[in-house]
Image (cartoon, rainbow, N blue to C red):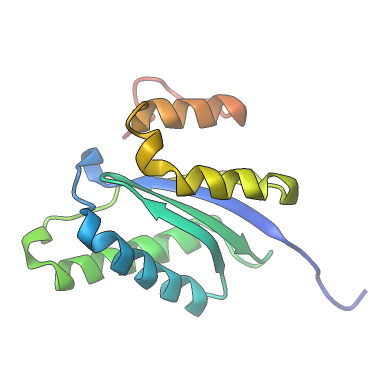
Length: 150
């Protein structure tokens, strides 16, 4: 077979450094649009994105040649630079060091999109830390309960 065929879906989640509530509502739309551009330049499609005060969700379609770490590194470094330039009062802005990525399936796509769409409402009931624990448990990811938010 001369071609590679794939549909790799990833649900990526990462937060601001120290989980600081500095992703202000009035900046989120512009930031997510900027992230769309970064992804497009890398040949990655963002199916759905969403942000709340201290973290972001991205539902990505990638290709086999794409490394999740490289994609997230480029998104985080470029958005940090953009935030520093666009919002001078956020010169100390930074993303957390790591990220979480969960594989997705075509059949789960509507559920993940709905989940990302409902982040504002969802986080009135549950913290980011609890949300992440639930993702880890659901995806059978081992984590250190003392350091999983570092």
